[in-house]
Image 1 (cartoon, rainbow, N blue to C red):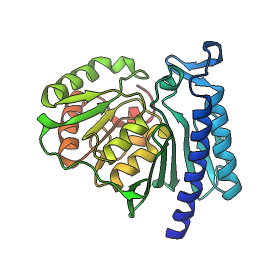
Image 2 (image 1 turned 180 degrees about the vertical axis):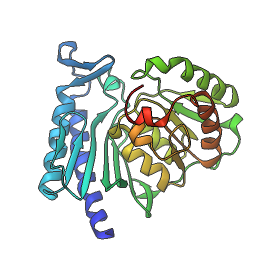
Image 3 (image 1 turned 60 degrees about the horizontal axis):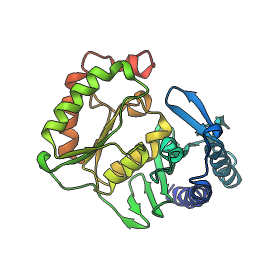
Image 4 (image 1 turned 135 degrees about the horizontal axis):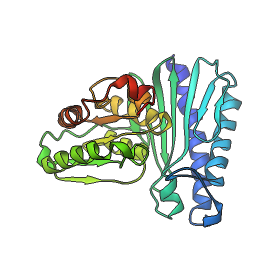
Length: 277
């Protein structure tokens, strides 16, 4: 399996860098009439679609029997042993607004378990990779989550609940309590990049709600393999199903989870997994 994962990381890195180069070549050129709205506050451009097309082409040439779940194109070859979970441009709103903070995110799942991760930040030429049980790396060098155990010194990342605005009151209560306990909170506009920064020790923790599997599949493995803890708001393993995620070093994860667990305790995880909320 290690040889398979090594090949997956190699092909995935090639695909991510190819897509990243394409994103950079069009960065700053998108016109307002070239932006489509998939849903409220959920945008897509021809760049997202073309980036995905290039990624899928490289993957399917190397692994024709692998399944693909991609944000813009849906599913391909559903019966593969491995499934690629693809976000061809995480941070589309940043991209549209000419804010240079976005990435390409590729997670690979075998069964129910994410086993490989590739996230590429083309603006800084940073390639984050991870393999289950083997560690996490940034441009080939090992990375680890922060060792900070002091909340008053903690730098955290979050995302606003634009897909689950009906839960804004609970989120604001959570944010206020976390904000009062810690040094600073950032909202950068790319969940995949936030998770990379947790894995590299730049942020001490990250939490968000209402995310999709392609937003967090790769990043969640990066954090875990960098020595961090990743759960849903109720300290369970269902973050890919619910889109409610906490990731960080053990101390900061515990702090955030206790707060989210309290403010969201009235919601049943089964309803969240079934998308009934």
